[in-house]
Length: 473
Image (cartoon, rainbow, N blue to C red; front, top):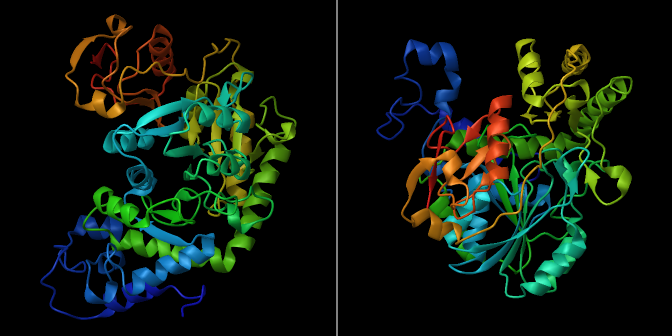
């Protein structure tokens, strides 16, 4: 039996990379022998030796029997799940697979309006019909918070035939819903609670962080292991516990949503990231929280308010997320982000009113010094920042799947008001849809998109990036 001090997949990769063999299998660079000088200069030599296919020693992601199985079992133990799958297509494929495993065409699934665009993709793939529920909203911060337990109970009582519930916790800003209370309500109906915890894989490793979704009773939890842990970008984890999800169907869904040629660089980095957290997680999170608390303390004399939702007692907050309100100095998050980026400080998420910074195990005291200096040097402007609703509850004409396959046409954006959208349109990041297939385009939605674009936001999903036309049903 492997212990958490071991890394079975990483060790197998290392051993295979050291083998001298005539390689007549993919990839074409053959362990780095075929790389160009440009490859070598930019990427180095060593990483290509580890870029290997499904060799006998390296197991099969879709039917694991040896080192991948052992690595996934160690991850399940470390994160508190009954079973864990490694993901190479990001949290996106995990969310899609969770919906495919729990819902079918026409089935109802309860979804918060601040869900990621991957949920919309999952709805299109599964054919499920969303029942939208509004998260609580902070009007001062113009920010979506978490889900209200009483509202969830009411929504379920009106839709007792729902097949699953999706919750986003933590949000991009680190706001956490009461997963334990939500799970208790959802389980009264015998259905699974799916938690998109992409930003919360570190929660189980320090008592000053919010409780993990798994320890709080969620049935399916998706983690992005690259957002705050040390895995490569696109590496993620899907965890399951309990009997409310058909694991065979989930496994089948993952075969559909993942690449049939998974990157062993990503898979190995998941094993290494688990090993790091299992053996050093407490100390690393202690260090990370210390940096985050230092940043908060040093902004106390700043005109920039710092988000703290824990005072109300309804929600908890991941204190490794630092969200500051730059509208207090008369600027937008987009303008402030551009100004800071030019001076060597880059935020994770700019919005109209705020900047959100991820403080993780990879940051240093020097990073915090640079961040605080940059924030305190932000130029103050006298122009007021126009207020904006974070989102509106959708008026839906058909399911996302029906809309995706429906006939479409292009029309002038202003003439699209009153029509149904054919596309998923998001301000990215965070990738929360402002418009979804089958949703009614309103003047407020269009104005908010135009305002965000003028302020410097990147709009994803538009066929016409100038926003002069929209694709409608």
